[in-house]
Amino acid sequence: MSGDTESQNTTEAPATVDSLLEDNGEPQQQLSADQLREIQKLLMGGGPLTQDSGASQPTNQSFVEWGSSPCEVGSKNKEIHCPRCPSKICLADTAVLVESEMKMSRYKVDAPESEVVTKFWLLTSLMAFENIGVSHLVENIKFLSCADCEVGPIGWHDITDKTKFYIAAERVRYVE
Image 1 (cartoon, rainbow, N blue to C red):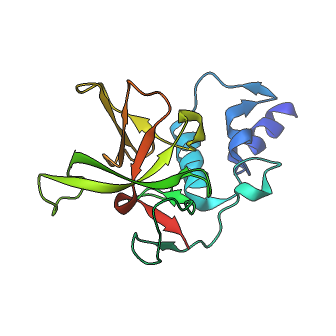
Image 2: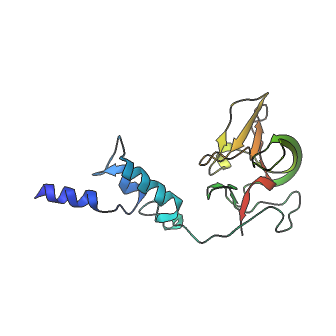
Image 3: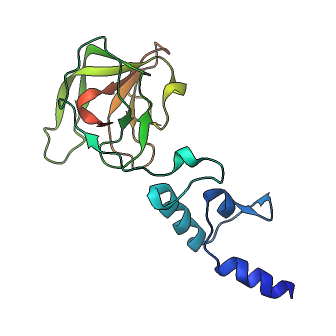
């Protein structure tokens, strides 16, 4: 009888990422390919992420590009997202728009090999990010990218100043 129950549980589609990551309340050591696909589907908007986090459910957010609404130096940011995937880079009001110059390599195929970027969102802590990837060190600079799809560089950090992380304003999308 318990064998029937187990086979019913494995054919039933899990409702949350939490249910996929746990087996009888204990964390699983390895996940099957089907479980990984189900987690990816949930993370990309296919359902709730956890049993008790209704706020994490996907919404029909529309994104806008840089320049679609006026923004002055010193103003606070809107919610910032990756330019390629739906990953959230940082929450609203966590960064301030500043002017600074940085020569950054291209991140789009049709862009020049490198360009000087002048408008950045300044965050004062690595912990202020929701999702960010960090490159290897290049002459005291670590370039920032999306941690999910690895598009970048979308920003930079000079390791000599641990309180300044810059996100290029024109290389990200915003929630409208």
